[in-house]
Structure formats: structure tokens, C-alpha cells
Length: 134
Image 1: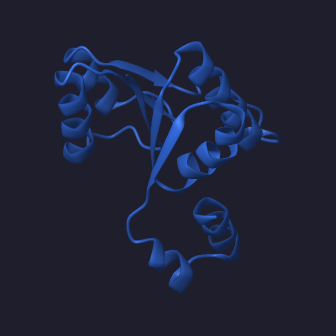
Image 2: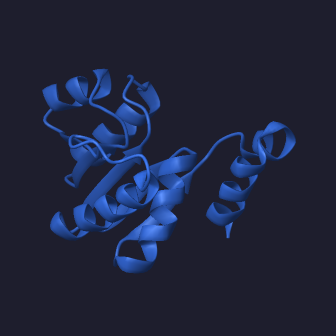
């Protein structure tokens, strides 16, 4: 099974790294994709044999930045025949739920503390959260 872990940060995360390694050790084909530049988590996972990618290796224009991330994710999933997308945090979740309509992958969105958005978030964050949850 081809599993994509999609997130918006490039720093190390024990939880994410251990989850990725768990599925890799089970025999699944696992990769990491971030919507930011490559960083410490890419280096660490690459040393452990995990394929790591960044969706901004070629920078997007700011006008269509969100659309470019969605199109990149669609093409990425088709190219690597991704079966499951595990997206983490608000923007990757947003990109994933839009891309979901154009790909055959199953989608798991992960967002902790989402009630904080409704209590303290901006209007834009609340709209994104409603789209993701729908």
C-alpha cells in the first residue's frame, strides 16, 4: 500500500516520524510530502530510507499559491499511485480535501485542537475549518 504523509512543517516530530516508520516497517510504501521547503524531518527520514518530497521545490507564484499546491498534490498522488493520504494541519488538510475529488486515494485528515480555531481563529481560518470538516 502506498501511503503519503502530507504536512506543512519541516521540523522534526517524534509522533509523525514514529508513525511513518511504523508503517514502513510493516511493509507499506511510505513517503513524506511537505508544503514547505525541506528541513530536519526530511533529512532524518531520508537517512532511514523514507522518500521525502517538498511541494515547493519549484516556488509557486503567490497569486495562485493554494491552487498550485492542490494541483501539485493531485499530480503527485497520480504519479506515485498513492492509496492513502494522511494529511496533518490546516492547510494540507484543505489542499487534500479539494484534491480528494480528483484522485482515487482515501483521505485521513488530522487536526488537533480544532476548537481553538472556532474560539480564537480568524474568519479565514474558520471558513477553512468548515470546508475541511464538511
